[in-house]
Length: 200
Image (cartoon, rainbow, N blue to C red; front, side, top):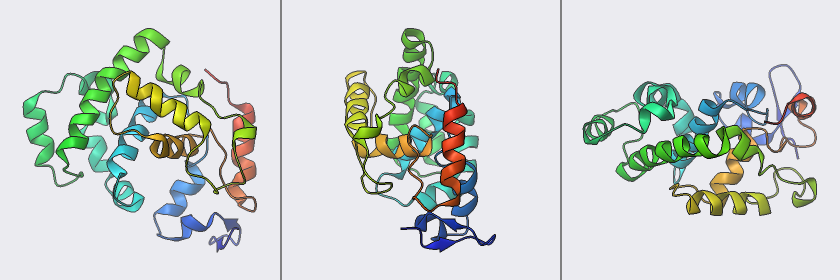
């Protein structure tokens, strides 16, 4: 049920009222379809960094992450070495977790490989767009058949720190699913954007 009313008087998903910085993210990004490889890779990285933490922490550090990781250009990140790991571990503007940092570097190399085999990250990820019958009512599930399949395939290809729940959150955020609540003012806008979106 939608329980948050925005400053414009329109109802929103309840979660976006939990912190001031959530509203703009909810209204402008979450649930709107994305085909840009850099943005897709960034979101996967940020979702993996969120593991065990709040999205508010990650969102507040997003600019720091972008600066530290070369704008999430995975071609550049794939070439990071031990000195880059040391640099990142000393950067107070990001989450300094060695395992997650090294996972991003590993995943960047896997992303480069994927663009060679699939043509683009977008082409690969949109191939896992869930079928409507997989999904229950909005915001009632944390995984789906497609997110489980995506996580399994990423693991098979050598990606790290990306399980089915993370994959589902990625799908929600990048518009592979319109998971805005039924009464949310952004649900219709996200639906319109998905109808007009050219799948890669």
